[in-house]
Amino acid sequence: MTDTWKYKGPIFDAHSHIGNIEDIDKLVEIGNSLGITTRIGIVHTKEGFEAAREHYPEGIVFAKYLSLGDIAQYNIQPIIDEISKLKDEGYSLAKTWFGPRWRDYYESVPGGFRLDDVRLEPIFQTLEDEDVPIITHVADPDTYYASHYQDSKKYGFKDDHLKQLENVLVRHPRVKFQIPHFGSQPEIHRLSNLSRWLDTFPNVYIDTASSRWMARELSKDTKKSRDFMMRYQDRVLFGTDVSSNETSRINYNGRVKAQRILWDTDVKNTPLPFTDPDTKDSGGTFINGLDLPLTVLRKLYWANGNRIYMT
Image 1: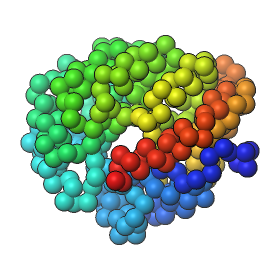
Image 2: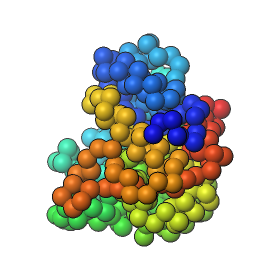
Image 3: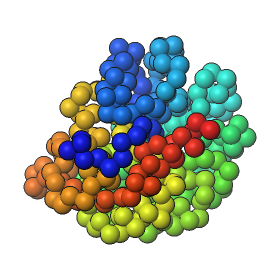
């Protein structure tokens, strides 16, 4: 199958995670074998960042993971300080994660916490003032809300999570937002809302992590999915969401292969090359390729990420 990929150039992975240095070497080595020459590395520890920067002074665009514990308590000054010195430390952008499961890790999160709370406004204003882009994750697959997040009093509702982020986007048109996982809206019935976001907010970009979520949902209506990719070909970044702490060649290969099948080919009903927990008990996930033109694939895999983060 790898001989049939339409695009054969370098790949910019706009969504990966950097942990311990012994694992970073493995991530880079496997990525290189798959054509990934440049990546955004979301850093989880100071030690991992320092080691990665020393060993890989080129090829990694570093994103600093902002302190969710402080954000959860609306303790904004430490976050403002982090953002203000971020570039001087060697980072290029920031990252936050507000998937519903974050409440499982920060039990002291106030019950009424909202991303669009005015108490958090100084954080986004600092991002704007310092010209720091941010990757921000706010929602998960529809399937998770039906299976994992049934306690809506604790986890909330997806439409509201998306609305909170939209309220932030309205207030901060000069902050560059990368919204992972197709804006958390690859489900076919959500593409119209995602289109509205991209039409309304020219400062918003989306990435294609995670592979199984993209393959599962976008394969359900290849015409609508392909039309979306054609229309917003300058706004979509390839991403794997692979983490150096859990990298295996099989896992990494599977994630990349699934997306190459989805974007590069016109195959029908091809099994996802790894297990999708969301569908393993209902027949599995099958990919229907979108057969994107080479001009679009060049932007997806390389040109968009290079333009946004490297120039």
